[in-house]
Length: 141
Ligand SMILES: [Zn+2]
Image (cartoon, rainbow, N blue to C red; front, side, top):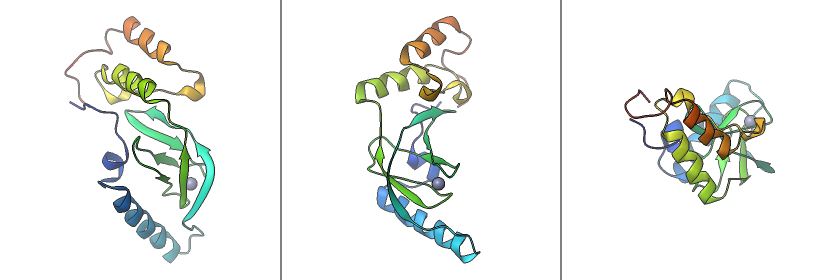
C-alpha cells in the first residue's frame, strides 16, 4: 500500500535535487542530439502543484506535466527543458490535510486534487464521506 502522494523521487527515480538535475540535463541533451529544439533554461513563471492519480504534478506551458516535490527547490520539465523555481505550494497544513484525505482512498486512481477545477479540501472530505466505496485500506496503489 502506498503511504504518500508521490513526488519527484518516485516519479523520476532520483533521490536528490542534484540527481534530478543530472538526469534532466542528460535527457535534454539526448533530445538535442536528435535535433529537438529544447534547452535547459530557468523560468520565473510560477507553477502550482495539484494531485493527479496519486502524484504531485504541475503543468508546463509546453503541455507536459512536471513532477514536483514539496521539499525541493525546483521542478524540471522533461518536455521542453524549463526549470521552475517558483512553485506555489499550498501551506504545509493544507498540503498535509489534502494528502491525508487522498491517502484514505483505496487506490491512486481516486487520489486527485484539481484546484484548477475549483476543488477544495472540503470537497475532498465530503467526497470521502459520500463515497465509502473509495475509502479504506487494502486496495492496490
Ligand atoms: Zn515544458
